[in-house]
Length: 292
Image (cartoon, rainbow, N blue to C red; front, side):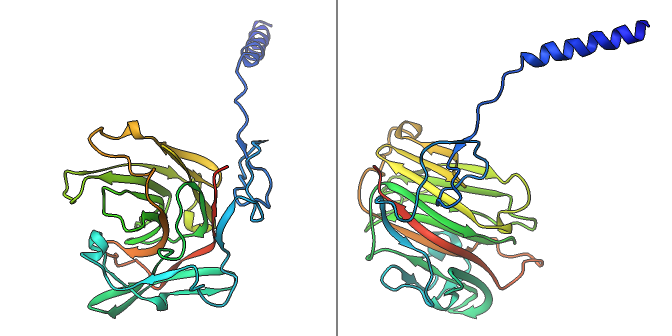
């Protein structure tokens, strides 16, 4: 009898305490699967769905043709200055980017070209499309594997680095395991560049399960005066404002016109014995919306 009474008391306690546990607020986001910023985790509509036919859409590429649209993208070739400033090990060539079945593929291959042992592609909108401020999105599927470095990012037209800035919308670094983290950053500093005159703010977002390479994800920046925000699949991951940077550096993100870049690099650390070639990133679409 005494034991039964104890159980009853514990049960009543749990009921009473449980009633005092606050209900977490609902996850806000776009709940329309037809929208480009659909958020599968959203529990309540936030009223900010974006659509391809919105008046705010100022530029897009759905990669629905049979070849890369030369009115929208320009190839960059070679290995740049010191591997595009990062000691990268690939030679960029146009042959490694192609459009098929509604997506753009950028392929990394193990092959000799221009004195380097790997090839890939790097494309940009410089000279064809540039802008300042807006919502910038790409729906992409990346890869697993050490040394792979896919990126979706922006530079200012005719700018110097780092004083004129760099906005990295999405970067991922492959490891010998699966790709569980994605990141983005905003770089600035003084020119001419030296190692003590460059700073950046970044973040790392872990995927809940599996790899970012398992499926397509929407990588996004919402950029306005004095603020840059990063989203993955409609979920906010980070933001930066001028006060987050040392005061001796100019905030360059309210100036110039900017262009888009997509590329797949091979890092200076190089592949491991289990890195597999060829491999690719796949881009379903890229969209730029003007701010309201």
